[in-house]
Image (cartoon, rainbow, N blue to C red; front, side, top):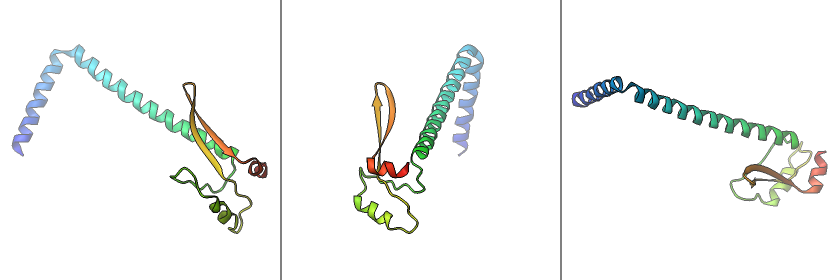
Length: 121
């Protein structure tokens, strides 16, 4: 254990000495790391914000109190009939959400049967 601590101390001493002799390179390296981390945090924040905004707009479009999701491509049509029989359910509509690209931009599409869409408006 002492040997590991000794090696770490030697490494820190060498690093401090090298940083003191090459101040410009040290500054540029630290600046590059700060810019990189800041960029990643900003991109993550923008991604989370866009996801929340899309979800908010979809909730405004589809005023549902309950949304059933599946990891598979589709949910069987029989689930719609089961949910319709639950007391207090006013209407049920299967919706498909697709992510796609238009040119270089990403877009989200929601598909609903026309007769189900009329029951919401």
